Image: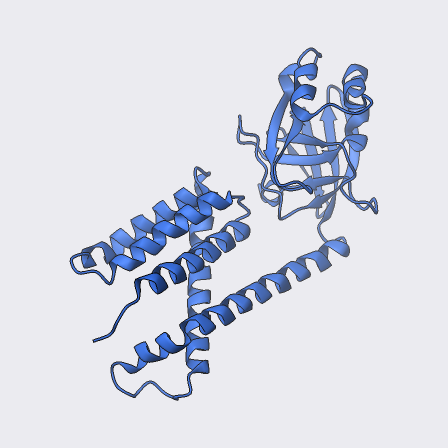
Length: 303
């Protein structure tokens, strides 16, 4: 008889599920609160524990597994557009297969007993002995692979491979800027769901009326909520909105956005025009070296 330790099952699956969900969110370019990730990971951990309890095996049929995994992704990231939701779902399983394979490989690599032919209890004994060391090494390998991918992306960015010309038309005026296709930009307007192009104020200001520029340039500066309230008295009031964000050097914040007449992006000698876009106005430089003045979400380029 093999003994199963409840604390090991719960703790191990909680850690695994959290890492897998976080990986799926990053690959799917979806931001999620840590609390939601932990809640979804805890639900998955409890579900895994039911496998070892009598009378619950019917909950592990293929249809139930599919429904439960969909619910887990919904708890962690939802609600999302269907395509983005399915992307997170697929990335979750891809990461699961990768991490699970690495973990099992490390467990048997660390085992002093070679082969798999030492009796029915042998695999369980090996896993008991090397569960946490194998998991630790698998997580290190996943983290190392992720950092390597991030390094490759940064290398491409520094070479300018993902920088494109950007034109914003607003109120009959046009401004041009150099934009970076930012894989970390998944911002959306909460009212319309439209993607957000983040742009430096200095790059956009020539398209703004004088009264709007005065509000942005007030000495000491207004916070985003007060600024939006002041902008509500201007001629462009219906175009302004507040956009929550979790990047750009801050854990949580609000960005004032404006709906332009049109945005143009030049990609491989072809110009693409969009009108279902919001421009988030960032009041500090995005790149201290001046290499770009705007951030474009990648799904805008593939639209």
